[in-house]
Amino acid sequence: MKSRTDWIVDGDRNTRFLHPSILRTSSLIFSSSHGHSYCDSFLDLILDLHDGINLDWLGGIPSEAEILKVVQSMKPFKALGPDGCLLEKWNECLLVLIPKVKSPETIQQLCPIGLCNTLYKVISKILGLGIKPWMDHLISPCQSSFIPGRQGTDNILILQELVYSFGKKTGKIGDMVVKLDLEKAYDKLKSGEQVNAAKSRIFFSKNIDQDTRNSLCSILSYAETDSLGTYLGVPISPKKLTKSKCQFLIDKVRAKLTGWKSKFLSFAGCVTLAFSGFDVEHRTIHLVNWHTVTQPKAMGGLDLKSSKEANLIAMCKINWRLFTKKDKLWCDMFCKKYRISDYHNALSQFGSPIWKSISEGFDLFKAGVKWIPHNGQNVKFWTDCWIGDHPLSLLFFGPHLTKHATAGGLFCDSKGNWVMGFVSQIGISNSLAAELWALRDDLHFAVANCFTHLKTEYNSSIASQLISGAPSPKHSLSSLVMDCRELTQQLLYIDINHIVHQSNMVVDAMARLGHDLLQDFFIFSHCPYAIKLFCILDIMGFEFPRH
Image (tube, rainbow, N blue to C red; front, side, top):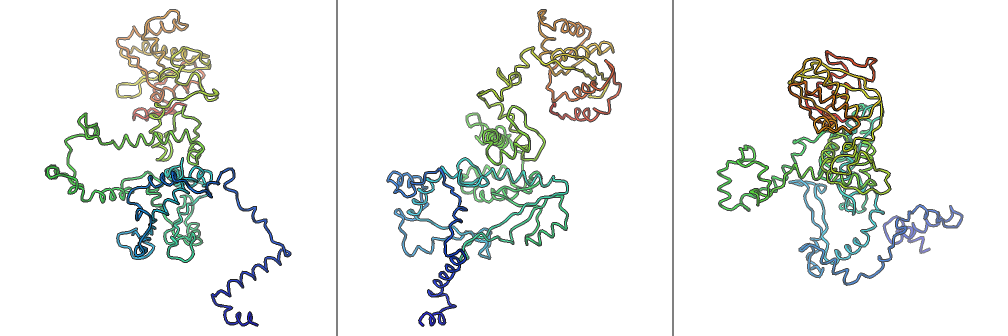
């Protein structure tokens, strides 16, 4: 009778009677639906994240040495009170609201920060230091911040590369990026990951039509955007970053420097600055160049860092992590997208702006890298630099593979305009012999056409050294070398220069034409249509890698 009375009086109220009643009812329903037996199969769904990790220290009492180490590692003036005890009147200061904007009007525009006392910090630091070595195994690879061995720039590189790919995407299947902004739970009774729809945005690839975009935005209740704004303080854009997109960084630096002139400059410094006429909006010519300013003080400079050199060093560091941390998510993405196997091959200069920046630091990175051969699987005997900065294939005359070779040459005036060109069939030959035969054909063609002054640009440094060096009768190609020397003596002026393959792409294109010709020797009085583009790019100073 009493239970009936309690149900009538307190059945629908938030009282002590209501909650036990609901728990008993739910327990009876669960038991009857499973045949009066409790089910424990759901325990198999819980992952054993600490498998193989010793967590016995969590239940142990920290030693005095551990506590002393934690206290000494804290920064000064960061905890209230030397013993962690706070006065009762200070309790309202344990939560501080920091404004996100200049004039906050709503609670969402304030960022709450909790102030922890010394005792709380000691306990949390001991637990944090104990679990720190295992964080890499417990946290998802997508989480990069605050974990040893990972950096916040990892996800920035992934997102920037992803957004750039969206801007270049073509085809029928499109992609989209959803930027979710989670609300803070400090103004709610129940914490949780509630999405802030007002700040969340959707970024679509360019191959998605407008009707599909409007439909997806209506379903998700998020607005479309053509810019994802900033991520971890870095602006994200499908194109190369411009000065206008980084203006907020300049504004922050200027805000930090507000009052710098009056606080840190002496009276003499203020007078010197006034007479210099320097102003942010009206710049004047500096009497000392930037190169001198960045020199050490002992050499007459101000010991300032050069921004360009600092950025190049940062790119070298990214190259080092790219080739030594291939198990990381961002490294795996770049290696698969740009087909990177090892650092022996030069990085492609074509790609996203962030990839071009990484490629700029590759040469400096490779120049300072030394490697140790282990099982020899990745060792390339003839193309690796074993002695000095050149591979063995350039230091020895052989052995070289013998293949069908063709030669190509062209003659230009002092302005780079086409005069005459030729293609010849050499036949089965090794690389050094083919280079010497090509040089002989060049010289013979020049003498036959009454050229008197000739300046050649040649790919092979070994062939150039054989022509200009002392005679060597014992060399296997000595007769061919002597023939080239006799032809050079018939010219009034001859200058044989060695250049890299990338700067000789027109001659490479001419030589490739020889594989499709039936004649042994063919003369071109005009530039062939197939290599006209290469000639234009060569005049403009472009360099192409040789394939």
